Amino acid sequence: MSLLKRLIPFLLLDEDRLVKTVGFSSPKYIGDPINAIKLFNDLGADEIVVLNINRNRSQNPLPYEMIHEICSEAFMPIAYGGGISSVDQMKELFRTGIEKVVVNSSFYSNPSLIPEAVKIFGSQSIVGSIDVKKTLFGGYNVMSQSGQKKVDLSLLEVITRFQESGVGEIIIQDIGKEGSLSGMNLELLKTVAPVCKVPLVFSSGLSSFEEAKAILRIFDVNALAAGSLFVYYGPKKAVLINYPNETEMRQIQGLND
Amino acid sequence: MHQILIVDYGSGNIGSIKNMLNKIGAPSIFATDPAEADSTFVGGIILPGVGSFDHAVTRLQASGWIAKIKEIAASDRYPILGICLGMQLLLNSSEEGNLPGLGIIPGTVTRFPDIEGFKVPHMGWNFVNKSRKNILSDDFAGSEKYYFVHSYFAKTDSADHTFLECKYGDINFAAGISNNRVHGVQFHPEKSHRYGYKLLKAFAESI
Image (tube, rainbow over all chains, first blue to last red):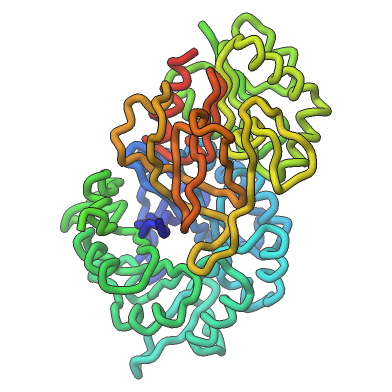
């Protein structure tokens, strides 16, 4: 029995509120994080990633109290990311009940952080996250600092370096597709899937669960992540926490095929 | 009204266990002192566990929990549920360490081999199969899955003591073990939403 394919809600945390962005900007209020977790418990989400997108996150200590509340409330594993820059922070996060930590910008400013963390906590606990932005010429720039800063390495080079650093899985987000509900960037997925030796979590733009099922069937991707799809419903984007039920999940995972 | 005592020996996030029991409506308390297990209000014990075998055994030995749990099991005073490492501690020994386990359920713990395509630790959701009848899995429909995180797997000496099995790669291992009213599960029910809830509810009702 190999790993089940996963559908992972990405929840964006801004202090004590959940928000949803489009293209990494214009955050809209979604609701209370603890309420959302409770709902995802009832709906049976298998795993959740909480990303702290607060602008001042690098100046402040991590919101451990909120994270503790989230972990205590959650009946599924929680991964946390957003401004993580030290092994001490990771230690505290694991102690608080976080299952995996997600590292993005710190990887570029401190390349030894992840190898050190992997040695202490094990690769299965460390996730590398890569944000990309399509260029005018059809290629991709890798971005850091919530899409503010361009990284001077090619996307494939970044993936390779993350893998060499020992991460247990890799997340890829397409900034241009984020929050769009317009369908995932399959051209990008086609490029990165063959290169990823560790489980790949592909994100951004997922429009429906039907699309998820098709993508999981066709591409060699371990998991699909989404924000809008799990927190919005309908053409007017009403806030509604939702997740496929057991039967629907089996369908999406291709277990009944 | 009987409470479930959750052994607190510094083994990580036990908040989720209490929260799930709260949701079930089963009152619970954390306890660091084994003397609390003698209270007439206690009707069951949960032994959680995260980290390494010897480290856990040392802590439990030092605090007096090893003796207390053995005593409760021997007298069949009330049910016990070991979770993850807590389950492995119920067995005789583990490849992970040198110290003996509680030996309440005969069996051993072995490390997963490194096989291409099956990374260690076994981390993620996986399905379990019923291999024996058990009070904790009575109403399982056959599609139950649970969240696992472990590098070592258990096998009981007698097949009669394994009631749930799981497969990772070529390895069939014990996901649920039981001897009388002493039970253990390799997975984390407190991180397995509705499936974990069902199992913990059955445990609470067995008190």
